[in-house]
Each structure stands twice: as structure tokens, then as C-alpha cells.
Amino acid sequence: MASISAVSICNVALSQLGEKLIHSLDDESTNAILCNMFYDSARRTALQWHAWNFAVRRIELPRDVSIPVYGFQYSYSLPADNLRLLQVDGGNDFKVEGNKILTNARTCFIKYVSDINDVSAWSQAFINVMQAAMRKDLSFPITKDTGQASLAESLYDKALKQAKLIDTSEDGATRLGSGMPSLIAVRG
Image 1 (tube, rainbow, N blue to C red):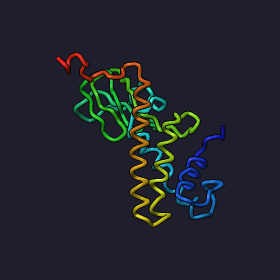
Image 2: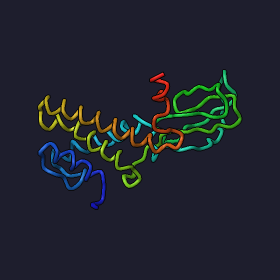
Image 3: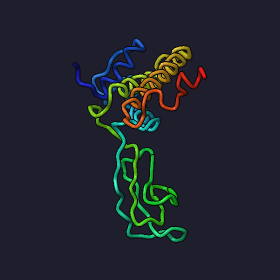
Image 4: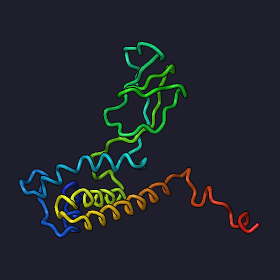
């Protein structure tokens, strides 16, 4: 299997658009410039769309030395790689302001989506999402064809939906069919 990288992800998208491939995101070609322009934003956006198993982190935040001016006793700085806060344990009374969590809790445990740059840490389903995201983002700037852009948007939505389903099915707390009425209850 070929090594997966940002360049290979971009090249899949470019090949699907019938375009010339790139050797590096730093190439001086128009395709490389566009890939470089869209890649990081596409990655962060795709990571934010779902609590991907490979990107979820749980940590205890160290308490900040400075205290909030009013309203709360403690503040905790969110990690630099935080893209989406999923859960705060240590008290239900908290407020997120800027990159801080303000709370009256003496400890602050969080679960969040981390900004994972390492492509080798991604699931195959997420790699498929990134390929579709790059195709979507590159489609109109490269082809100037609204039909191609619409198709790319549709394919991205489909890839995202499938990847989220796969990722969610790996969660031990989620059972297939949970929340669905049983056949007996439906027939009853």
C-alpha cells in the first residue's frame, strides 16, 4: 500500500477532477498552490464535523494561576490543539470564553477533538472524507464548472455520512439498532 500523505490526498482529488498531480504542496504549480491554500482548513473542518475516535482526547487541565475577575473561582486554558470541546467534567456550571473554561470546580477534566495533523493516525474512512473534501474545495477554482462543484459537494456529503457511520459503529457504547423500536414492538 502506498504511503498516505497530504500530497497523496490532494492527488486523489486532482485525479478525480482530471487534473495534473503535484509532487509537493510547495510546488509552484497552480494545483499545488490551491491544494496548499485549502488543505489545512479542509482538515480542521472535517475534524470538527464529528468526534472521530482517532482524534478524541481526554485530559485534566491544569488550573490557571490567574482567576476570573468575577462570576467564577477558577479558569483553565484549553489545549492549543483543541478544535471542538465535547465534554467538561468537574461541574456543570462552566462557561467557555475565548480559549478558557471558567468554572467553580477545583478540577477540570475535558474530552475534546484534537487537531490531528499526522495522516498515519487517521482512519481510512476519514482519509476518504479528506479526499472528498479536497475535491469539493478544488472543484470550482480548478474547473470553473458549477456542475462539477455540485457533484463534488454531494460526494463529500456522502463520504462524510459513511465515515461517521463507520466511526460511530466502533464505539462500544453504541449498539447497532439501539434506539430503534424492536420488531415485536412495531408489530404489536
